[in-house]
Length: 186
Image 1 (cartoon, rainbow, N blue to C red):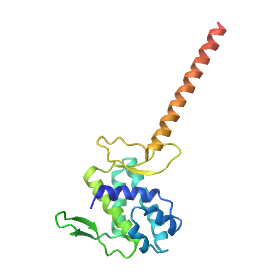
Image 2 (image 1 turned 45 degrees about the vertical axis):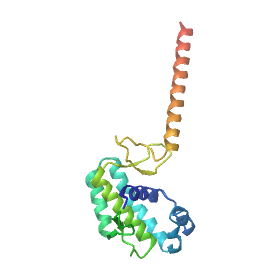
Image 3 (image 1 turned 180 degrees about the vertical axis):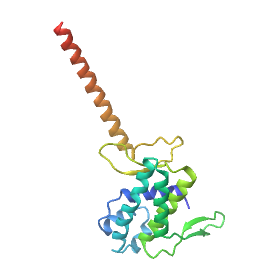
Image 4 (image 1 turned 45 degrees about the horizontal axis):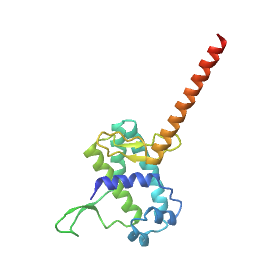
């Protein structure tokens, strides 16, 4: 089990707009084998889980370790996860979330919780965040070596950098205009 990938999938799940089965199929574009198992009941289950999971990212973003751990533990208690050793490649035994999940929603929830719980234990409780770009509220997982990630994507990072650059330019123009007005007044 690649816990970091599962944690990143958890962030992608929180950010996903899932109004219907078609949207869930699109969300699972890289996992087409799950498409045939999607049922209408998965949608409200995943929407409820998105709302339950977002506060975990928010707690991490403000360094509230106690709230983050308590929230994750509550979610683990209400959505029990059954890990198992996978032997589909006998030379590379590894952990998976059990294949006995009764629905796609249960599988995605279990993967999310196992990934986030392991990431928090292995890398720390402040590795989850909310995008710093003013027009975005997406969540992300920070696996950078120096824990410096502030944006959910390169697009948001570029948007924020361009906005900051333009603000500095406006300030410089305004400062120049103010100096010209002062010089003219003297």
